[in-house]
Length: 225
Image 1 (cartoon, rainbow, N blue to C red):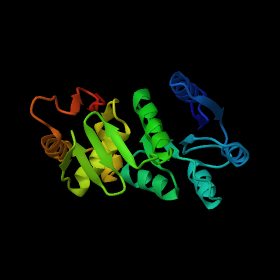
Image 2 (image 1 turned 135 degrees about the horizontal axis):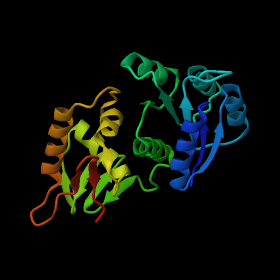
Image 3 (image 1 turned 90 degrees about the vertical axis):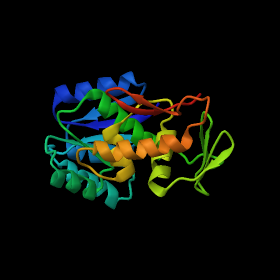
Image 4 (image 1 turned 45 degrees about the horizontal axis):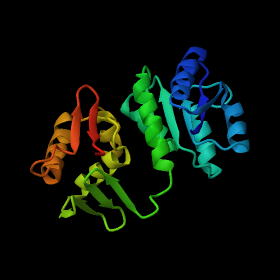
């Protein structure tokens, strides 16, 4: 369970976000004013923040900039009806870790919060990620499948590492595009398809199902069995 602060001045939206995150087992608090949120964050520890850009008291950009200036590194998912590329870039430059345009699907919001929480968790104690027959050495950046070494290009390694950090769960194509390629606009289907296909070809072994499954309408999942 993580402690999450929802900073949102629209009561209905705040209730939707809080209900969704509570349903995921998290401890959720809500505030509707930027200055009140800053005071809470300076006094209490939270594991993640969902932050609306347009707030009374202190707007979202100002709030996240002040957090970073105070060296508070709590992961921030910024939410806004201002969803074009320039606005997203402004939110990320101010110190946000991710940006989601309104209106949003609740399932995508909870997935993005989960990604931020996972990113913030401790590095694996032994430096390895494991999912099914796939084993990843994060220090030496080496990969094995069923004990056999696999040579991956840099982007393929980042893609596999990201899937492995969410192994057993479907990850949306847009989230993959943003987190692996660092591009915060509409995902390029062809770019993702090409890299997934190349990665599958390198990971698949005769007699075994592909470790990367396509989840129709959602994205991809790295199997854990």
